[in-house]
Amino acid sequence: MTNEMPKTLNAIRGLALKDLEAASDEDIRAELAAEGIDPDQLAASIAVSLDDVLAASLRQQAAAAKVAMQTRTPPKQLLRPTLDRIKERIAQAFAAEPQLATAFREGSRQSNADLETLYDDLVLMGKIPDTDDGR
Image 1 (cartoon, rainbow, N blue to C red):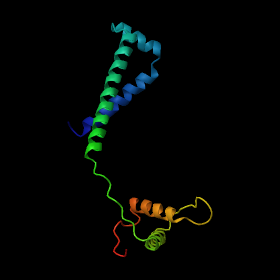
Image 2 (tube, one colour; image 1 turned 135 degrees about the horizontal axis):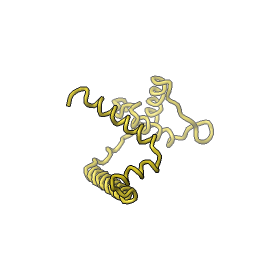
Image 3 (cartoon, rainbow, N blue to C red; image 1 turned 180 degrees about the vertical axis):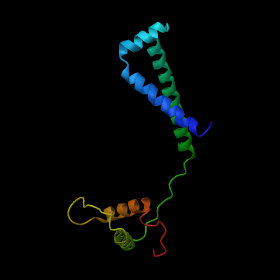
Image 4 (cartoon, one colour; image 1 turned 30 degrees about the vertical axis):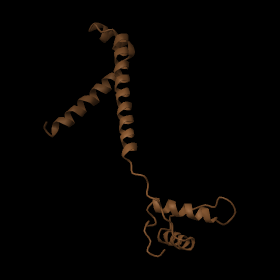
């Protein structure tokens, strides 16, 4: 296929779509009837074809998900540093990236559990490296 071929095919597709959009339903039915094609039968066969394609795609996605679930390695156990070190690392992350933000769920202070899960989230986001020599 030459370099110009895709451009030509795209131009032809564009013209065909314009022609199709300009035609009324009656014009399309009359054209099909003139060629000996039953429009209702054609619509039914297209619907069956689309159903087959959709079903095949869904089967493929399900099979891929099944394989992924079977081959997935379990997440490594996250060993958190001490709470004081968590606080330091969170502060460092927020200082390094001012666009990071958090909100308090209740009150004006985050609980220790909130800080631990915030730490886990920041590690998952890559904002805090998950290795820490300063434990």
